[in-house]
Length: 339
Image (tube, rainbow, N blue to C red):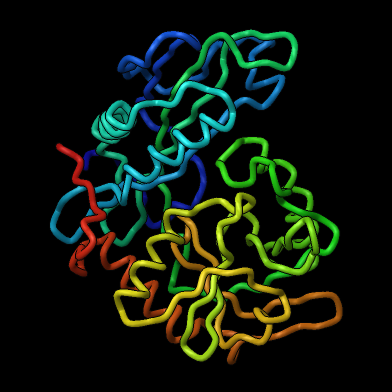
């Protein structure tokens, strides 16, 4: 690794790298492989569908250096398929899985010196699919761009996992039935910035959103999936179209069941979650974030002594062990990047 970088100072933030990937097509033509170009600003019409009507998606994934001196992705095929489902929902041409996988491999290869050493971070990979052609009137754009950029990021938890304190919102909702909450649409994220900032001003790490229909059941934590554990059984909200089908969520379910735990996917009420023994949220950035407490109105519940629970910690260690290849990849989740 030739880059003169202080890896220990990396945070989960943007560090511009050398190279990005761009492919373009019209709404009628099939996708063809794109090309690598220097990382930098792009030119786009002010009438672009993505700017005017939010016709855009993104993915988040990581490339890791492992204990076997390899660079790997974690389940990139699932990211490709999720973007395809989102493209269908937003009336964009889905990027074929073969082109998606080849593209993310190319970008990591081109920026390989930016991949941190094992245990000191990862390379965050951000694919974007957008309606880049100009359109006036609410209709699909005439042309589309598929782009990927990468950035090295530090470990989400420096110095070990820390439990976070969360606030249940009765005022704001993330998604409604029949909407786009089940896909990674760009428009899903800006509305959460104000509730998140308000919660952080009160000393909380993030907001827990309840369902829009009854304000009873937990859906997501900010932009992360939710789990709680009661009597050694894992519970997580079922996928009903308003919750993003997280790849980390799916991995935890498979891993926990393999380890002998029962996992129940059903509606999880806030009342039930606050009676649980442990709780955590999960996503690409942190993998697993232990929850130390949840506050709902005047009621605050602390899990154990407010530190990461035993099962939460075990799952975190097992999953990150697979990603780092210090544990056996029994599921075949790792995808080696040719170097």
